[in-house]
Image (tube, rainbow, N blue to C red; front, side):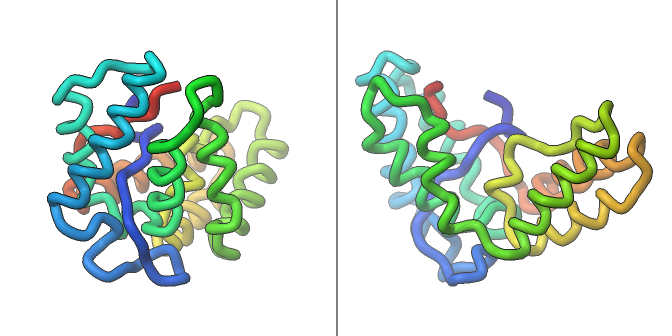
Length: 176
């Protein structure tokens, strides 16, 4: 899974979903442990290997929270992934974040769906919208005010700009 489709390891944060004490992960050791738990669970379920590359790729995402991704949503996702039953899809963990979605993000989801309806060729509703911080959600929503052909490009560019600015790298161990 690509970084723009990934999710980050996490801990807890404030109610805005955009900030948290020390980020969602806490210490680097805490972050690594959370990543290891999900990688181990994926391996147990034969969804992926238990190799150190998967753990290191997850660990490399630590800087994404809370600058780009909502600490609350990341925490809920990682907690779910670490215990998800083997016969259940990762999408259940995405669905489990519904209560963590702020009004700002709900407005982004609605605006994105409206743009997709108005513009049949629009493909800018990133799979990671459920993850973004409120601050990034506002930036992405502004992109949706552009013409159909420019909106998707704007959303992807703004998302990638935010990832780069935060020093995000790697991907999280979604197993499928």
